Image (cartoon, rainbow, N blue to C red):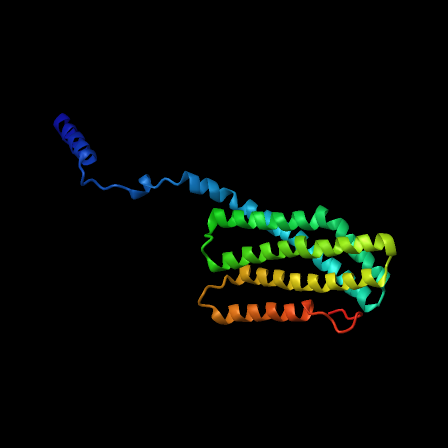
Length: 219
């Protein structure tokens, strides 16, 4: 019995020390950093969705209020909607849009690749709408506020307000296209889809950004 136990121990020892002994490859796969990083992905995604909802929902609400005033031909009401945009701009729209882009980029960093076409288009679109809001819509809205302070709801203030409304519509068409890109995740092979999205964006630009023939036109 002692000899049998000794021989079994010897075989076990040789099996462990032998280079031909079976090795479980999973024992050598160590990914603590990747797993720790992935733990933050759901939170980045949640915050990205929350701030995008704030940004898009708030903007659509103001556009609807602006259209209601424009359709009623109520210049004073339209100008006052724009004044609310001025107040909300630095307190709500800019922070929400910036945080949307930041947490979207964090999602890519944690679980995707910046080389993916849909990622490039999505983040580029968000960045474009952020720039449009900060450097185009915001200065025009501030001009309306300055005009209102000296002239009230004058024709000049109303005309600028209509231009802001048209620019905002174009901006939110771009945002909807960005959302479509994020959901559909097109690749370079999806030529038809990409062309359709590009045509929609160009068409919206021609309709919304072209100067109206009449000062009272909405679009």
